[in-house]
Length: 405
Image: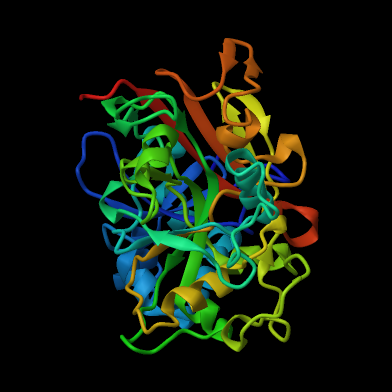
């Protein structure tokens, strides 16, 4: 099918136009691409052929320069791309610059500067509290409703969708063990999340206000925060996640610009505690996003977490992680934290889905408590778009392989 003839209702139609980086078979040259249906447009080549003033931003091997260019450039480029793939007079020039998606290699679309991960789902946080602190009066930590809890991760191990995930090794100690042992994780888990990509940096010492979220954040992607629960359980006191998380984080090859998600904006859940002024979004535009996520293990759907239930918004997370004066850099990535809804079929981790291994999942290829070697995990999602169409988010997939230790 010709690239312009996208079927009606395709979630990757001209209303979506996510950005990625690709290369052609036999070539090491990387180029910025924009997805339309099951094709990829060489955005730099199209910009050059059509005399765009933004050709230099798009004729790059990474999204970095476009990310740093700011909101005016982001909006201008998106309008131009929409015209290039919809206006008939551009068809003759642009059509030869499309490549079938099945014939290209997709790469990590930007250089990850810093990586921060949050803990923003009340459903997830309460489930975790009930699992590990069943006798506690409140399943939430005392600070949870007052600030977005987060930790700094490892940017160098963020990998693009399709990258194999080697089972990590580390220390682990079960409550009944006399001493810790070392070896491959036996409780390897996933966390279905959404990642937000920072474009415009900020100055050291200058916090970013809630209202400035869209001036700094370019777009979002699906994210899988792989987690070795047994390593994490032994190491995390008193400083939090470390080796149980830092071995790999998978992200989509496609970054969906915020401008594609205007119809998906929703109000977050009602606040039950008064917020300090820098986090108080009661007078701001709706900060939530209605994203419908699907989690599949070996092709079998195990969960459908709704992102609209997230208590803390991406704008609040950005404000909080800069309120101490920490600066942003182009390419900063921050994860939402595990997305979990109120029902059992809406939980975004195996830890919750199996209740820490107590209730194994029944899959067509056998029971699962945590991941086994050879298992393939796929996250996919869509959001409401204009006129009832769906906006697609690029999937994230990863296959677990034996570790080297």
